Image 1 (spheres, rainbow, N blue to C red):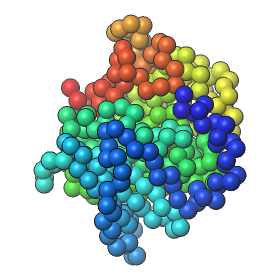
Image 2 (image 1 turned 30 degrees about the vertical axis):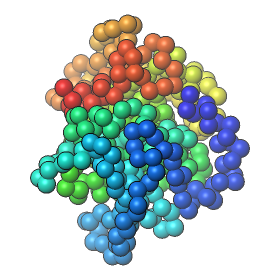
Image 3 (image 1 turned 120 degrees about the vertical axis):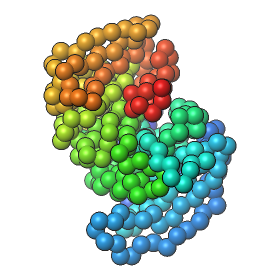
Length: 327
């Protein structure tokens, strides 16, 4: 349980490390599917003057092939703060090939490298030919409005940071700017809701996992939503009941079905979902009557706590099919 495992540590160290959060992010753990250490850095000059219509360039990047994928760690200088995001893409992308791209937001206390290893992202990137991007939160946290520290206590502008990441992705020659997708786990899922509301026009669809729309925001236009959640989740309770992790939030966690139903209503879908159970007690609630091309679904996993779902339906496969990236 990613949030519960970090609650005590976060509450104890937050005062001590708050200043550190303003100067650098965590370096991150190594993973089995990514290089065991950071590649040698190749630095490009920082941009000192950029027209408003052009996104700020990364100050440095590191890039290393890792089997069938290329792994690039990008550093962006924002004042005195260095922010990072990891880019995983097929190693053999053609010069004129623009790929669908998924932005993946880690949970609290989980860095970008660990998030990239939570599911077989590298294998999926190579197989289904897309780009996966893993931004890094300040001290592995995201300011999703009410939740979560240290990012909330430092008033980190994570919407601004992630918007700049999107702007940089849009001008990459390997990214299809019309097929940008957003997902996140736990605190990252809360951030995905917040970002999808603030920058609805940037994304083709959003898929939070093990999270809830803690800010209660609404998208500015209809946008497809897939929410996956375990019904016994003790960290972000499915029914909105109290939990220890809510101490990290200035507002209660709303019930997951309530969050998804509100999104469906904002999208203009019908109010009553249709339910089906494809396998082993998993339920899928789908809202009919949405505008053309818009889908809203809630997948509930029985017995899955606060963890990335792998059975009986694989969460990554389900998400990539929902995004139209895999068949």
